Image (cartoon, rainbow over all chains, first blue to last red):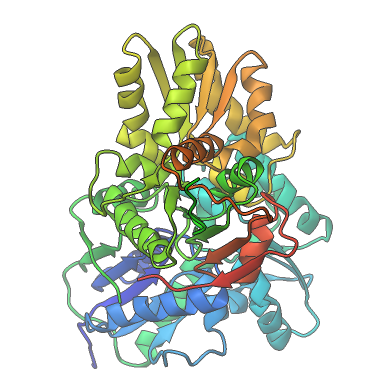
Length: 269
Length: 269
């Protein structure tokens, strides 16, 4: 049986991509993973397409130099500007858009899908285009939610947070009113607000997590390509960030258990 | 009478420093001003001291190369890490801390001053240290307000914004309870939330705007040094940013009237 023991690379502007890492570790517990969060320049979602592409290329190159076998751009914003973009020729690389849109089209029964993401992602129109390509009869309702990333990064993810609930109502009631039965969480930070989001859209709307879908897609692709790690011991996770490792540890702790996990500050170029 | 017709330089991580520009144009209408907003890496306030200093040095050098006669670091975060820092030898440069603290100490009658600013500024402890130096008997109550910058950058500055009011209550009620009579708005974004802040602290608390105080301090220093511009026509304002000029125009419009003002994208290094 073919095998490849090199690590899987995952990158994001900050800590949001750890939702993909979390799912990867659940479904591929023996894989080594290296993660990069570009915390010296976070967030990406409010910046221009050109700037985001430049940053993403540097992130990708950093992981390539660590000899990863496959890369997940676990950032909705990066993924949205990468679609149809050959700027940095990503072989064995996936963003979150394709897997997330496929899962949403499978989940939706009434063919009304909502999409929430950063301003840059929504501005790119990539979710809507891809949904229409896979399922032309589906209606798509999109909304940028610029306050969700700062809410998550500052820990306002607990149920009953008054301000988070106010933003969730502002962003989501218009989508709910359109009768959506499926909602794409198009930014990898958003699953941490699932409960707040559920309180507005109700339990009958399927929430599709872009980070988790990208992880499942990676597993499928690695299996088909004979690139899975066949070792029996647990995989090792190593985290890199571009700003202080100590600050990264604080934010990342909202996403995964960091016990015994090494965090190293690095430089990009 | 001595004169110097070179422009005044002003920089910030984003658009917040325009509160200083606005006051400069009011009190020194004949001065030319060049402004730099490092929008490709905004915000600074959540980042580490080391990273902020590196960015600030690049911002300062960019303006120096435009032959400015004086520079205002119109960013509370940058100013807070610059205090006591000779990293980039800023001759004829001021941050916002010293002028703001002096104004607050003059304004406070009961010697109870509140300080709100970004996480990095509050972590630095610089406001508290400087207040104690000028007025040892004053009690200082500090609070970081990490959600205020995203609220301003996304336009949630109107009175009656439910979420902004919820954060204002969370951050400010503890300061109000201590009986402060003066509140330092230690981040140049915060004056746009003055009404929301007033609704919590009441009308009997003096609000000290760091951007405006830095502008007044610059006027005094330029006058004393014989560096004022003595021309009679209105000064020219030129804006630079490191991300898209179009996105900058959108955010900056919340702060100043942009009619006829040129905005140019630039690179730092």
